[in-house]
Image (tube, rainbow, N blue to C red; front, top):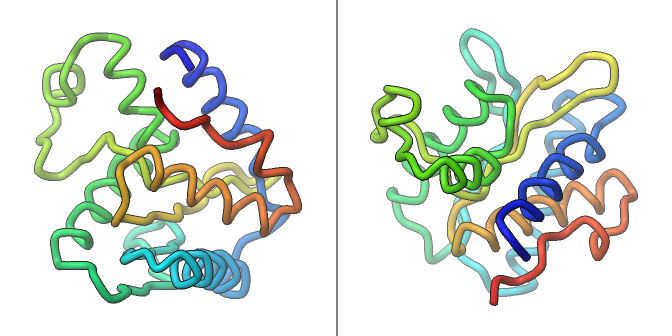
Length: 169
């Protein structure tokens, strides 16, 4: 899949994977869906589901066996990216790749606080907009992204096979 195809697919994912509402129950459903997928596949993963605000409200958190504090740091940096740009962290990364610029060169923001790598997806509520994010860390970035998309498809009743990004060649 070309870079342009990826960006088009990411735009479609972000527009399509909307929730009718969001609160602690939905956060729990998304988080436990991710946890169940990770356990079934024997994946070490950190999972975070939160509502944006000042301050953000963490509604679900889980660190599975095989993760380290570095995974939590990646989660925090990815969340900052989604909170600022209201796009998935992988989408921001693909746009940077398209521009040929680094994160700090393009946005003049410290890379130690932001990560334009896959694994964080904005939670978009119909009629309300972006209200939070779901984030994972533990796999290569495209796989992190696809795992979140898979969980959101399961929660929203969408077909994952038509929504996922294909494996890179």
